Length: 371
Image (cartoon, rainbow, N blue to C red; front, side, top):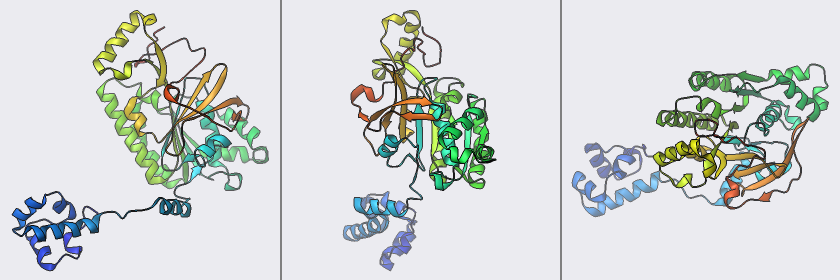
């Protein structure tokens, strides 16, 4: 709307001609100047300038919309603002249907907690026929850590959907809908993005999984260059999700953080980590998501998988449609299963702190073992 032509806005012909004569062509050109600057440039009175600016603003300003209108519009266009159900009832209810289309969903947790298990189940759900609650499409699975297991995928399918996978040839058909890419570095991943975009457009892709982004990013050189590269990639991935209207799921690793680290300047953080290598017992640490604050802000939904007091939890720590909640879960032959569908509401530091019982090794920014 900012580039709408002034001569198409219904201004009096005299004023439209004056704007054109002064090379003020679009609404942006006019609204970027103050009324007094326009008076001097157009050589007209304040009343005429004020009237013209008010008219231009009225034409280009987006109309106000009520919450009721937005709710009804979303209901009418559910195919564009839909969800991929996870089949975890409590989590799906909290997310108003499941993993949202057109958005970036992050799975965070330490190694072995169940992130890849979650991704395998989502891959199956996206490839299933609509009659079984699936999206009937293909899946692009970026397997950066070589953790994808076809055997485990089929096992989850047989245990979760026996009526489908016991049919002759169906296991092969479902597995054939999942396209695996294995870049070994961030630069290789960058080179494959164009191919990924074409596949999404041409192959009826309904889900993109990146497992894991941290493995790709942390393999690069540290510092500003890595953050800049990460910023470009998250921007591209988000635009891909919005453009194609498919769910994008990205896994992330964890790192240790000094309790007061968030209050420090970058050079102070580096000094703290240097001192920590020599005297790790003198610092109070806990696990947080890797990849930094900028990445965290780019994510629409964050799911944290953790272990605490002998139990595993999925924490919905960030969502535009739900308060922070935690659900107990276990991993079975059919994948992740919730032990109850009533989420426990989280408050304070519990929202972002990640627990991992039995994790004795702490890691620095660069992945070095500290203990």
